[in-house]
Image 1 (cartoon, helix red, strand yellow):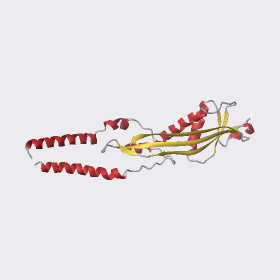
Image 2 (cartoon, helix red, strand yellow):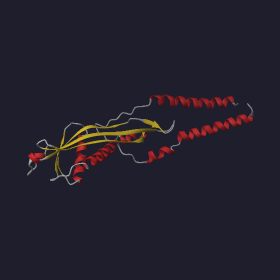
Image 3 (cartoon, rainbow, N blue to C red):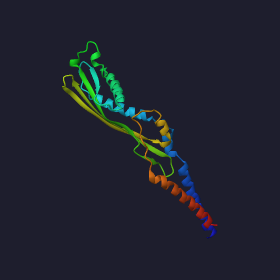
Image 4 (spheres, rainbow, N blue to C red):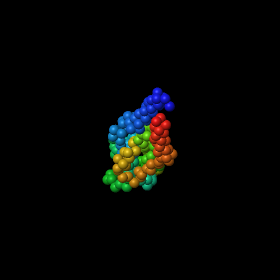
Length: 224
């Protein structure tokens, strides 16, 4: 191989190597994600629940007196989070909220005339449905997805149904995989998502790296 051809070849190799390693080591695209403060899994779950309940409470019919007795129709693990968000949202709307199991213990309260707001939590979970890389050798990003499905019914003690509502919401984001320990720092029994690894990329990435390195070695010896 002529000297000029060798020089041209090594210039091309150098340009490729420079671009490759700048992509592998650089994190310009991901820097914004890495540097921002991410919510924990529990914070993300709570925000989705609160947003959905705010929206459904806006649809409650106005009535007097503004006294509601809460009741759950399921034993879902996330009931306490829904109940807390409901109480906060209703109190912001000037309702007097009576917690479950204490309704008829209140003095001067005619239980026969009370209005019941019952809720059934159909689904509340947080998943890691996907993971990906910005580029082949970039750091891995993990998708978090919260799903909520809630049914509500407002009725009188005699069984008359005054209103029914439904809240369905999905929310989520992408976070660096290296921040999963931070995101999972709060131990909540019903939040235990499993991250599925991409089997193809687990084997393809080392193989491709070996090919690239082998190519460099081959070019080095063939141009001597």
